[in-house]
Image (cartoon, rainbow, N blue to C red; front, top):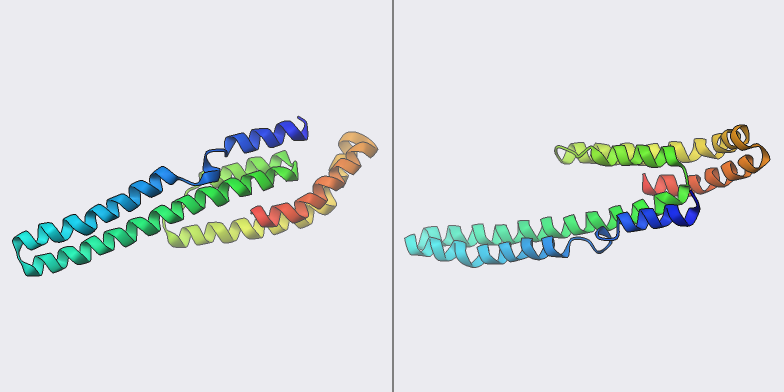
Length: 165
C-alpha cells in the first residue's frame, strides 16, 4: 500500500471526528440550559426551598452538560489528529496495536489515567526500540531497500509513537 493510500484511508476514517461532535455538544449544552430554567420553575411551584434546590440542580446540570460535551468534542478532535499522525509511522503492527488499545474503554477516571500513562510509556518504548529494530527487520525482509525503509520507519516512529501513544 502506498503512502498516499494509507494517509487517505486514515484521514477519511477520521473525517467526521476532526470537527469534534458539534451536534452532541449543542445537545448537551441545550439540555443544561433547559434544566437551568425548568428545574427552578418546577421547584418554585412547590415552595421557595424546593425552588432554591431547583436552581442548584439546574446550574449543576448546565455545568455538567457543558463540561461533558466540551470534553467529548475535544476527545474526538485530538483522537482524530493522533490517528492521522500515527499513520505517518507506516508501521502496520503498531497501528493495529493502537486500534486494539483504543477499543478498551476506561471504566472510571483512574482507569483512564492508567491507560493514558501506559499508552505514553508504550509509545516511548516502541519509538526507541524501533530505531534499532526496524532497519534490521527491513533488511531481513527486503535487503538494502528494506534496510532504508526500516530506517525511515524507525526514525519517524521515534517522533510519532511517543506523541500519539
